Length: 374
Image (cartoon, rainbow, N blue to C red; front, top):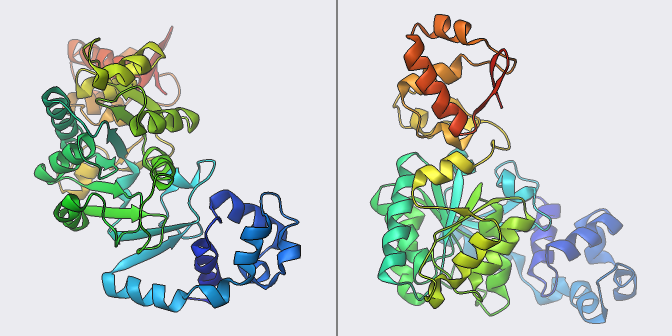
């Protein structure tokens, strides 16, 4: 690990230096070494850096031990990822305020580009638990990674459902990886490490607090192609994540609930405000837009030999063999129906049925002269 990386980690350890403050400092000084070598007076030239933060940065080398942190991470098998690392989650990198540093225990894989957040209240009902479990299992069935916050209630139900299906799941923590909260989820966290990852922007020994949980929510939504709120009151952490998902341009989904249920008040409000109503996994796949960039089909990695090694749209997940064959022969320019029938060697009825499915899933559009991929 070079000196600049060590300095970068040291800066993120300073209380008050969040992702946006780090960026302003870096843009002004040009390197982490220059930031740490600056005087408190020079640091205060940067917007948002007051006397307290400036003093803490100027004395950071005497206050914090990067060597101790690195030794702890080596011992606990915690990886440290910077925004500059190729393995840093691509979708997260694109949000307004991505964490400068991520601590990761477990593994992140290319498949995690197809991650979906399942979140909700800590005080879940039997209805909420049933829907969270059912919908999570449906997503995992198609190779989607499940992201949540390791909290009691809906979060825990989503993580457990993913693990029961032998799927991947990622827990984003509101404190350090060495400070699992709630403590009764310690065993669940250990299971997640075996088939996914624990992630935090906070150093491993940092205790969670009221301010850190809303901050971590932007990571939950930022790493996801879509966010599903299963059950949530109007004032809750899940609703904060929903707002962040909207601001980040993520698709937002909600499960409807009884109008007289406090735990469903937030979901019903989201639906009134334009979130997509979810009754089954099909509702999710039909409404998601194209992926940021093509990703490897999880079925390929599992050795199931799908038609295509790449997915460009989540709606491709549930397609059967005929539908995949037809999609493969629809070009990015208009392809006439007769040409699709000829290329697929299917009868016209099979092709028309498949095309209707592809249209409904927003994978293709129809013009006067034929069909083309979106």
